[in-house]
Image (tube, helix red, strand yellow):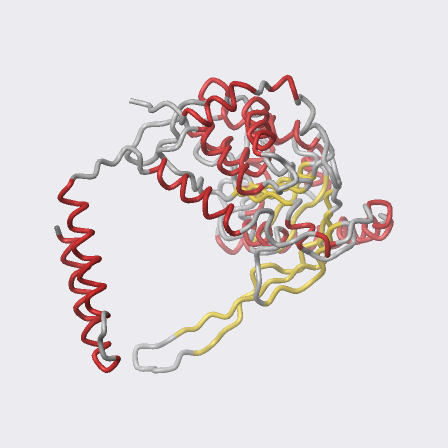
Length: 421
């Protein structure tokens, strides 16, 4: 049985309708032009033999000089086979990747900062949601945590309700999220809730890691259509996507095709087939353009190809990109004037956190209680906790520090004994 939302949240959301603020998410607050030039990422791997104590350190290059640009109002889709570096590049562009990262990544001509972090949304591939909270509760708690104190509590709840309406979640707003062992909303609705959590801060720059994975074509179409509509408000949307349909492929303003860390194509999605035909690769039969270019990224241009031929195809495509597109792209990057996108905001005025520590504690505590509301606590369980707590306190009451190790050992034994019960 699906539990109803908490009375306080339900009452507040019912008092606020989406018609009161229909346009709060129509436009981005700070349009962002994202540039990345010659992005290189390396990692060190250690190989050890059976008789070797110390392994040999080797350097592996994941990204090999990736260049591109996304402007406000555009959707960039990054395609490529598994291991091509899509997620690594997306994480780097989202400011979440450290280590040996080289090249230049700028946001309106500036490096990543706290100001840009608060204007950026990142949706991971796995939906990390609390299964026993409803859709409304999930978004309201996120709104209370992430929106700054310049908004009142009622305004934060109103923002959550507006996101629910915009993402088409009204029909399931009172349903629980669900999980592996709890039945809840569908996979597409769960993905939209994850997107809604990032939309609450009205991000100017939105990153998504394979938002359509595991979904049917109709649900994937709805999600990409939603992202396309968000880009129309002046937002910059960057996503990785796996095996999109032809309908989805032609919705992307720009496409970046990767293979083993190399760029094979960067440009408009509608011009991809024409480009590959110009370099000597055309499909033998009519087919989905996404399937065709992914075959090329794997080095497959026909059905009867050997491994050596696949390597040659990849090398020829990398060489063709450097000869035909790389120089034009760099020239285009130089022509774009970063100053025209500057908003004059000072990064120092943006704090690291939008709310205080005490506010976060109260919201998280309340969310934790509501998440565990379906659990039942018997008097025996409460008694066990109280007894263990009393014994733990007596261990340290007027005790000598020299007996600390013995006390910790006894405390650990009590803890595992309680878990065993």
